[in-house]
Length: 153
Image (tube, rainbow, N blue to C red):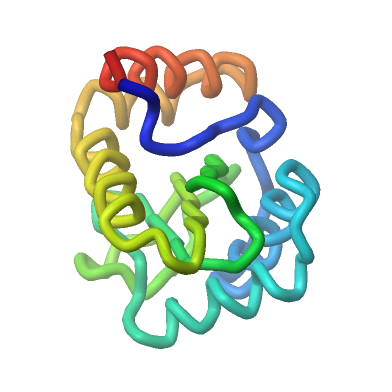
């Protein structure tokens, strides 16, 4: 079995943002740079999904996601915020961990399976703590890849 989505090292990092729109813009830029996508299109699709309801998952986590043309398979990005930011989350808590997912336009079940896997990962208290405390992007990527690879096996 292969991983449900691709996560490249450059798609993981720590950012400074002061608002939900700034987070979404930085996330779209990261997706665009790492996966060679059009930043405006990525941002437009993520914002379009966000208007349907906040992707603030709770417990300081947001999972912005969208479907987009031009992808062969789901791709992910992970951003840790330097300081928590209000995100209209279900529990009212600000977010400091943002796990983005983009899937092909016609991905259907693959998108939902990838979202479910990310959701399970982010609900795990030990993983949540480890991601919050990791010293930098390399450690974040290592933590995430260990789980993604393990779950794909």
